[in-house]
Image (cartoon, rainbow, N blue to C red; front, top):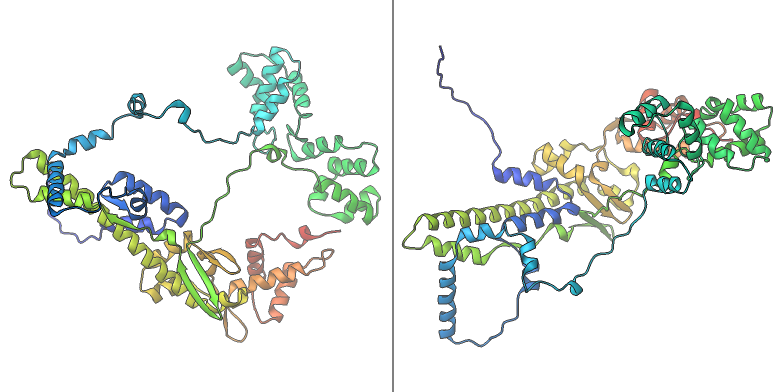
Length: 491
């Protein structure tokens, strides 16, 4: 038997305005223009003042009589009477095809197309080289299957048996293992060198075989790759000298020759990916020792509520008789007006929050922004800034994770200014970025023949007053992308 119960709960829920503000706050400047354009397209009651001034037509009759003004008002009111919200909603559904078929459309000669740079992909280049070979239909299909099975690095990481199965099921081609091997050897002669290898060792050997085989350095380099690749990758140079019976100068030439090879030949022919274009959200300038913070002008668009829609709403609202269509029109216009006002308020609130947060960060790290010395960075966590601006930590996090500031010494992500505190022997708290800077300087100035181990780096930091465990030093070193001492060794 079902029982009905009545419960009373107190819940916190975000309003639509708050959700809109949160979404806008985490949008970086580079994406804000797109977000505003989307809102302008969706909401006709929202106007961009800058665009309106550009598109505003010149006044044909600047000198008008009062009678003419009243006439224009009457004509405007009659136009409002004729407005139908259904017509507006249906207008969006009209296809571009119908517009192009009208007599008022642009002529074919006047249409301009944007030129697009065309560049062959890595796989297309391989396919073109395969097309130039005199192969049978069967061998051509096998070659296509091999090229299609390569990964982005240019390696064939699938076993030959899998290729044979794919050819049988998808292409209805029965191929033997030696036939696929023969086609693979042909493809391995394609450009770029090293393509079609099944592992790193084979990739390097393919490239070395295309060099001068009479050179003694090339011969010894092939011997190193073929028989001592593990010692080479781990930089056990002493073992290599004993195994090959060579001195350090010869080994240095061999190592340099191997380092010239491309371990990922697929990257050399691939189209370069699009790089993210960073647009700073803030600018900090130094005026004789006084920092000045400004917000990127693109974060402050000139938006306003459409006057025509406001007048339209006032006209409908004051109408004496309201039928069903009139009520729908009033509701539609009011919804668009409210949405426009909310969006404008959210943009203004976003500007205020960005400036407030960045100003607190700048004042907290004032010495760093003056000198650009990372040792001047104070320990700072999200709570420190949240307490200063009296906002939630999540708000500061949304600002710090996606916003950039341009200074006189570079453009940085706000998140990079946050760091944990480390206590020195004197009891002073310093940023862990200061310790990382010291580690970087010690490693950059070390003897590359005898690089500093983590234990030695720990002792150096202890001498400078930073008592840190060796595992912490290793964590900082890995965070900076610096390998262990053995892998930093050079001849």
